[in-house]
Length: 204
Image (cartoon, rainbow, N blue to C red; front, side, top):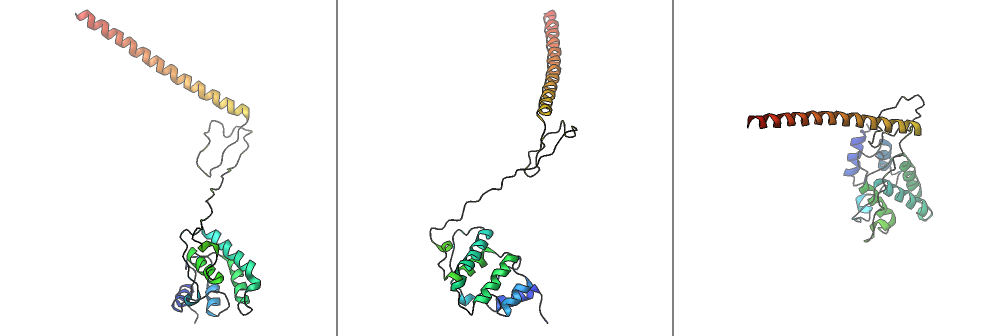
């Protein structure tokens, strides 16, 4: 009876293989069975050149590093290991692993000489994706008088120049109406204050 994925992962760990994290998309039942049967390049703990990386790059960068290392050095790989490395490259198309696994495999494949293990290595700067949003035509005025959302990822509404000026005019008119109301209330307060002062003077 073949155990489930979790059981296969545990068996590989017990047998000293450096396997990807169980939660990673690379760590499939197929992948683990190929490790068990020796059909894929995935060294044991005793076979790897363990190296430390103080500032490892993101998973995607490590993934690309490993794929590039395989492709650039494939002709130098011994004949007995070439089919296993080729299978690893095929599996890397299907999923990704965790940082520790990538670093271990890179260390094993390059004997610890990969640039990521250099003392002065610095990961590439993070680039924030530009949210270009989306635009919606508004010929029928469906979106008139609506505030454009400033929340990231919600997109924006594109208005014509005339519609934009109409909205600005309405805002000014509303502001003027509010100002007139405030002036009226202030005038009423002023009249009440004058009457109160007059009443106080009359008492004395």
